[in-house]
Image 1 (tube, one colour):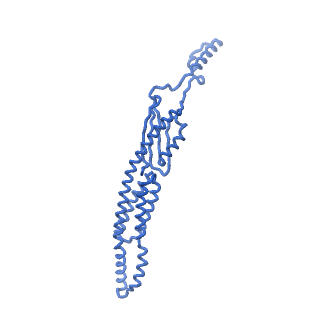
Image 2: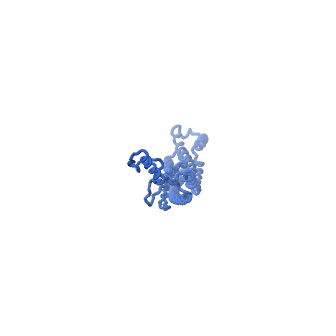
Image 3: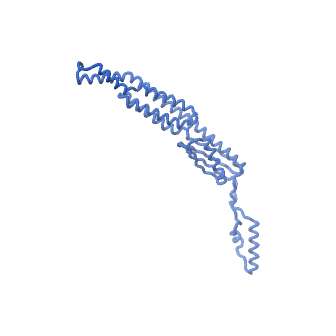
Length: 289
């Protein structure tokens, strides 16, 4: 199925009195470019997360944010009560030994090493598995978004390919009359210059065969139709984005050759229309996974 590289997914999880929020955004890119914004406790799992996202999302500029909100008031620091008491008793004992009054002893104790401690709790494996499931849910949403966008891209491709085919059909009709018209025009010009009686019909026909071969576009017409059909078939493949870009280049090559050989104003107008449609196809193909 055709998928766009553009997408968005979001999922939430309640775990251990915390709300985990996962958001994933994806834009088009030639390769895989993953940007992570993680809660501090998840840093150990960054590499694993990158590998999983690369497998599931394949390609694109991917931004993922995982942040946690606490549902209760947390004490930012903890006091080592046993150590604080020990320091305080030592201060009082020192004051007694020196016959000095201990003033503001509590404030002094709090400055001593390891009395105040801030613990950053790392995520355990059980919690990480649940968060990983939440990430997978967000990825699933993003992929669903990509599939919906892919259907729009496919519809747009079909409309533009049909327009190119319609122009090609008109070119085939004009091509049947074009050569005779060119021959007649050249004949009239020669007759005006040298006169009808002096014209060598055999030599004229020989020269026209050589000239007409340079204007022949039958191969280009066949190849162009083949490339259009191949583009449609490729849209049915998985992750055909790069392949569609290459096919678009081949379509453009045939259209340009037809334009350079046409030597016919009505056909040139049709070539311009085909080029315009092809440029829009190329723009959209850059968004295909």
